Structure formats: structure tokens, C-alpha cells
Length: 285
Image (tube, one colour):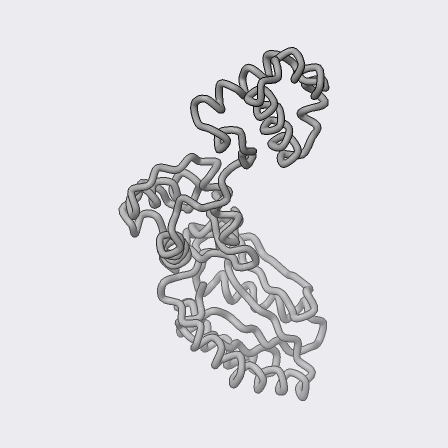
């Protein structure tokens, strides 16, 4: 048997062949006779005999191939790491990272359980735990999901019903453009669940104000100055003209400009053409 033929055998068949060959030599057969009988090389047989002398028959047994299946982390240690990745950010745990990367998780494991693991192994752990690299959503720390849900379940249905009765078109308005909540990096999070990064609700000044209807029709206006009552009123006038005779129900996110005296006085004069409604103060994301 050639060496390449031996390697094509299953581990159990290789083990049986090694033991039969060594046993034959021990029963007074010569190395040449055993090599001819089993079709193996003298080099291979000498190696098996050496292993037998050092460790007995146990040394001839087949060894499992590949990486050991047993995790280096104990179940409770893995559970701790998963909980921290899910509930915390690296900087909250005094790690020099803004997002969860393999390097950040590697340092977290060392910080918590003093086990040194390679970057590649960390990647396999994250995949096994159900984490994938994702672009996180950013949510203002002031936001109240409960208040938003309540508004959508109670106040919005009334607005929608009124719009249907008065044949008004519902618009959702906001100022946008370059914003402070832009997120370029990626962090690890559970598959199918976008991780959330807490941050302030304050945004950088933007030069674009836009609205979108429930049917996806978008209108926008670019302006040079800061967002103020004059800019907002200009948008309101433009909206009235753009809907071609329909009344506008504009839903906004409760900016102070929306409640300015100048704006309110203007709205009173155009009540038959446009009305504005506000999200709760904690709805901003």
C-alpha cells in the first residue's frame, strides 16, 4: 500500500492497520515481511513502532482532526459577553472603541474573563451567537417610544379620519440634509435586530426642508438662512400651491419655530387651506 493510499483510508481503518502491523512485528515477523504483507513503507512502520514504544497501543489510535469542538469560553462566560454586547457600548465598559468590532469583543473577553482569543476565533464566536456587522440606528436619549406609540394609536387615527372627511392631503414634514446623527461605521448586533446608538437629539443646522405624503410623494425646498418662522411660512405657502386645491394636514416634530407667534397668526388666516399637527415632544429620533 502506497502512502497516498493509506491516507485515503478512514481514520478507523488507518488505526486498525497500524495496530495489525505493529502486532505482527511483535509476534516475530520481520519488518520487511510486514511491509510486504500490508503494502506499507518501512519509514511508516518504523514510525508506528516508535510511537508504540513511547505510548503503547494508545499512541496508535486515530486522533480527531480539525479544531476542538469544545469552546474555550464556559457557558456562563459566553452568556456574560453576549449580554454586555447587546446592552452596552464599548465606551460604557471603558474600552477604547465607539462600536462593537471583533477587536472590541476580543478586549472585552480579556477584560471580563482573562481569556486571550484570536480575532478569527472572536469572529466565529460572534457568528455562533447570532451577531452580524450592521450599520446602527441612532436614537435620541430623550425619545420615548411609549409616547410615540400612544400618539400613533390615539391622535393619528383622528387626523387621518379628518383628512378623509375634509379631503385633505397628509404631509409629514422635517428639516434634513447633513445631520449630526449620520453613522458611517458598523458594529456587531444580533442578526435581524439593528443595534441602537444613543445620542443627543440636537441636530446640526441644515439647508433643506421637506415633506412626504403617505403615498410617498416628496416635496422639498432649499434655503440659505437658518430655519425660522419666515422660512417655515414660505414652505407652507408653497405646499398650499403644490396640492392644487386640496387642504394640507402637515405633521411636524414639534420644533419651536412651528409654534412661533408669527407662524400661528399666519395659520389662523389660512385655516381653510392648511393645518399643522405635532408629534409629542419625546417623539424626535
